[in-house]
Length: 61
Image 1 (cartoon, helix red, strand yellow):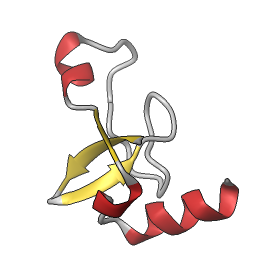
Image 2 (tube, rainbow, N blue to C red):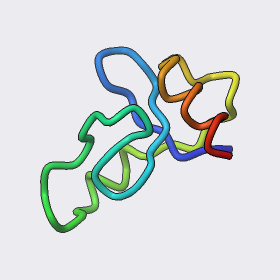
Image 3 (cartoon, rainbow, N blue to C red):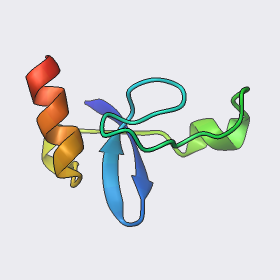
């Protein structure tokens, strides 16, 4: 199970509090708010649709 968010109908893996694995910014604010945390959903690797995120995550781990 990986922390994910949906952006333009693609599911991305979250890398840290601002970026996903492929480099897209998913949070522009410095401090998380409750609505930001509600967007994070844990999904298995089979449901991730962003291929750069998938490839980068497999290479790093």
